[in-house]
Length: 189
Image (cartoon, rainbow, N blue to C red; front, top):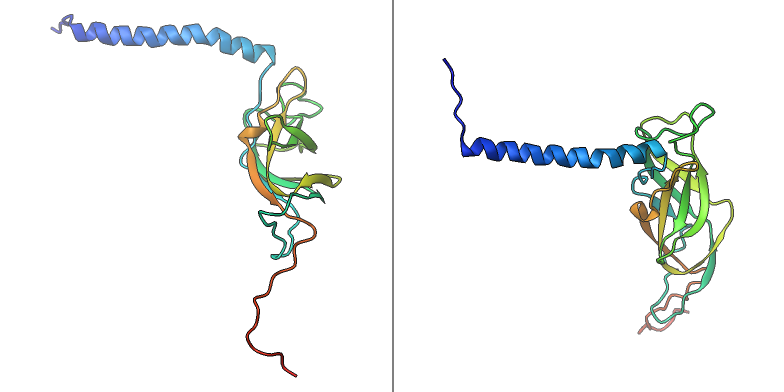
Protein backbone atom coordinates (compact mmCIF):
# COMPACT_ATOMS: atom_id res chain seq x y z
CA UNK A 1 0.00 0.00 0.00
CA UNK A 2 1.25 3.40 -0.96
CA UNK A 3 0.31 6.49 0.93
CA UNK A 4 1.09 10.11 0.16
CA UNK A 5 1.57 12.51 3.01
CA UNK A 6 0.93 16.20 2.68
CA UNK A 7 4.01 18.32 3.35
CA UNK A 8 4.85 22.01 3.19
CA UNK A 9 7.17 21.38 0.23
CA UNK A 10 4.31 20.03 -1.88
CA UNK A 11 2.30 23.21 -1.30
CA UNK A 12 5.28 25.35 -2.36
CA UNK A 13 5.78 23.35 -5.57
CA UNK A 14 2.06 23.54 -6.34
CA UNK A 15 2.14 27.32 -5.77
CA UNK A 16 5.12 27.73 -8.10
CA UNK A 17 3.45 25.71 -10.89
CA UNK A 18 0.21 27.62 -10.36
CA UNK A 19 2.04 30.97 -10.67
CA UNK A 20 3.77 29.89 -13.88
CA UNK A 21 0.52 28.56 -15.33
CA UNK A 22 -1.36 31.75 -14.42
CA UNK A 23 1.34 33.88 -16.09
CA UNK A 24 1.11 31.85 -19.29
CA UNK A 25 -2.69 32.09 -19.27
CA UNK A 26 -2.53 35.87 -18.79
CA UNK A 27 0.08 36.46 -21.54
CA UNK A 28 -1.25 34.00 -24.12
CA UNK A 29 -4.33 36.00 -25.23
CA UNK A 30 -2.18 39.09 -25.92
CA UNK A 31 0.30 37.02 -27.95
CA UNK A 32 -2.47 35.30 -29.91
CA UNK A 33 -4.28 38.61 -30.53
CA UNK A 34 -1.08 40.19 -31.90
CA UNK A 35 -0.48 37.15 -34.09
CA UNK A 36 -4.07 37.09 -35.37
CA UNK A 37 -4.19 40.83 -36.06
CA UNK A 38 -1.37 40.58 -38.59
CA UNK A 39 0.43 43.51 -36.93
CA UNK A 40 3.63 41.59 -36.38
CA UNK A 41 7.13 42.89 -36.67
CA UNK A 42 9.55 40.58 -38.45
CA UNK A 43 12.88 39.73 -36.88
CA UNK A 44 15.84 41.81 -38.00
CA UNK A 45 18.35 40.40 -40.48
CA UNK A 46 21.65 39.07 -39.14
CA UNK A 47 24.77 41.21 -38.92
CA UNK A 48 25.37 43.13 -42.10
CA UNK A 49 28.53 44.25 -43.81
CA UNK A 50 28.90 47.41 -45.83
CA UNK A 51 31.27 47.97 -48.69
CA UNK A 52 32.17 51.50 -49.62
CA UNK A 53 34.63 51.67 -52.54
CA UNK A 54 38.12 51.48 -51.12
CA UNK A 55 40.49 54.41 -51.42
CA UNK A 56 44.29 54.18 -51.50
CA UNK A 57 45.98 53.66 -48.15
CA UNK A 58 47.17 57.28 -48.31
CA UNK A 59 43.53 58.47 -48.37
CA UNK A 60 43.15 59.03 -44.70
CA UNK A 61 41.43 61.97 -43.13
CA UNK A 62 43.51 63.75 -40.55
CA UNK A 63 41.84 64.89 -37.34
CA UNK A 64 42.54 68.53 -38.30
CA UNK A 65 40.83 68.26 -41.69
CA UNK A 66 37.10 69.05 -41.81
CA UNK A 67 34.79 66.35 -43.15
CA UNK A 68 34.19 66.42 -46.88
CA UNK A 69 31.01 65.51 -48.73
CA UNK A 70 31.79 62.68 -51.14
CA UNK A 71 29.67 60.58 -53.53
CA UNK A 72 29.70 56.86 -52.71
CA UNK A 73 27.82 53.73 -53.78
CA UNK A 74 26.77 51.64 -50.77
CA UNK A 75 26.68 47.83 -50.93
CA UNK A 76 25.46 45.67 -48.03
CA UNK A 77 25.62 41.93 -47.39
CA UNK A 78 23.64 40.18 -44.64
CA UNK A 79 21.90 36.92 -43.65
CA UNK A 80 18.19 36.33 -43.05
CA UNK A 81 16.23 33.39 -41.65
CA UNK A 82 12.93 32.92 -43.55
CA UNK A 83 11.80 30.11 -41.19
CA UNK A 84 9.35 32.34 -39.29
CA UNK A 85 8.20 34.64 -42.09
CA UNK A 86 8.57 33.38 -45.68
CA UNK A 87 9.16 35.70 -48.62
CA UNK A 88 6.05 37.23 -50.18
CA UNK A 89 4.82 35.63 -53.40
CA UNK A 90 1.68 35.33 -55.50
CA UNK A 91 0.41 32.68 -53.04
CA UNK A 92 1.74 34.20 -49.78
CA UNK A 93 0.66 37.83 -49.34
CA UNK A 94 0.39 38.22 -45.55
CA UNK A 95 2.81 37.60 -42.71
CA UNK A 96 5.68 37.51 -45.19
CA UNK A 97 8.81 39.52 -46.01
CA UNK A 98 8.19 41.97 -48.85
CA UNK A 99 11.63 43.61 -49.07
CA UNK A 100 14.70 44.66 -47.11
CA UNK A 101 15.44 48.34 -46.52
CA UNK A 102 18.93 49.80 -46.04
CA UNK A 103 19.31 52.78 -43.72
CA UNK A 104 21.97 55.23 -42.57
CA UNK A 105 21.61 54.87 -38.78
CA UNK A 106 24.41 57.16 -37.58
CA UNK A 107 21.88 59.66 -36.21
CA UNK A 108 18.94 59.05 -33.86
CA UNK A 109 16.51 59.14 -36.80
CA UNK A 110 17.32 56.59 -39.57
CA UNK A 111 17.74 57.87 -43.13
CA UNK A 112 16.39 55.57 -45.87
CA UNK A 113 18.97 54.73 -48.56
CA UNK A 114 17.53 51.95 -50.78
CA UNK A 115 15.54 48.69 -50.89
CA UNK A 116 16.57 45.15 -51.74
CA UNK A 117 13.98 42.81 -53.29
CA UNK A 118 13.38 39.41 -51.70
CA UNK A 119 13.76 36.23 -53.73
CA UNK A 120 10.30 34.56 -53.72
CA UNK A 121 11.84 31.08 -53.51
CA UNK A 122 14.07 31.78 -50.46
CA UNK A 123 13.69 29.23 -47.63
CA UNK A 124 15.26 28.84 -44.21
CA UNK A 125 18.52 30.64 -43.42
CA UNK A 126 19.81 32.48 -46.47
CA UNK A 127 23.39 33.72 -46.16
CA UNK A 128 25.06 36.43 -48.19
CA UNK A 129 22.04 38.46 -49.33
CA UNK A 130 23.62 41.42 -51.13
CA UNK A 131 22.21 44.71 -52.32
CA UNK A 132 23.80 47.75 -53.96
CA UNK A 133 22.35 51.24 -54.19
CA UNK A 134 21.34 52.15 -57.74
CA UNK A 135 22.90 55.60 -57.42
CA UNK A 136 25.70 57.22 -55.48
CA UNK A 137 24.84 58.96 -52.23
CA UNK A 138 26.35 62.10 -50.75
CA UNK A 139 28.04 61.12 -47.48
CA UNK A 140 30.34 62.98 -45.13
CA UNK A 141 33.77 61.47 -44.72
CA UNK A 142 34.33 59.73 -41.42
CA UNK A 143 32.57 56.98 -39.46
CA UNK A 144 29.04 55.87 -40.38
CA UNK A 145 26.59 53.19 -39.24
CA UNK A 146 24.42 51.38 -41.78
CA UNK A 147 21.49 49.11 -40.87
CA UNK A 148 19.14 46.70 -42.66
CA UNK A 149 15.47 46.08 -41.83
CA UNK A 150 13.00 43.42 -43.00
CA UNK A 151 9.68 44.89 -44.17
CA UNK A 152 6.29 43.15 -44.32
CA UNK A 153 3.34 44.29 -46.45
CA UNK A 154 0.63 46.31 -44.66
CA UNK A 155 -0.65 45.89 -41.99
CA UNK A 156 2.63 44.20 -40.99
CA UNK A 157 5.59 46.03 -39.57
CA UNK A 158 9.27 46.53 -40.19
CA UNK A 159 12.16 45.30 -38.07
CA UNK A 160 14.45 47.74 -36.31
CA UNK A 161 17.45 48.66 -38.53
CA UNK A 162 19.51 49.29 -35.38
CA UNK A 163 19.38 45.51 -34.67
CA UNK A 164 21.33 44.70 -37.83
CA UNK A 165 23.97 47.34 -38.33
CA UNK A 166 27.62 47.71 -39.16
CA UNK A 167 30.18 50.48 -38.87
CA UNK A 168 31.99 51.80 -41.95
CA UNK A 169 34.59 54.48 -42.58
CA UNK A 170 33.91 56.80 -45.54
CA UNK A 171 37.22 58.08 -46.88
CA UNK A 172 37.87 61.37 -48.71
CA UNK A 173 38.28 61.64 -52.50
CA UNK A 174 41.36 63.85 -52.40
CA UNK A 175 43.71 62.55 -49.75
CA UNK A 176 46.35 64.87 -48.39
CA UNK A 177 49.71 64.32 -50.05
CA UNK A 178 51.81 61.93 -47.99
CA UNK A 179 54.49 63.73 -46.09
CA UNK A 180 58.08 62.60 -46.58
CA UNK A 181 60.67 62.74 -43.87
CA UNK A 182 63.54 65.09 -44.68
CA UNK A 183 66.53 63.25 -46.01
CA UNK A 184 69.99 63.86 -44.61
CA UNK A 185 71.70 62.62 -47.75
CA UNK A 186 72.19 64.75 -50.79
CA UNK A 187 70.39 63.88 -54.00
CA UNK A 188 72.20 61.66 -56.44
CA UNK A 189 73.38 63.19 -59.67
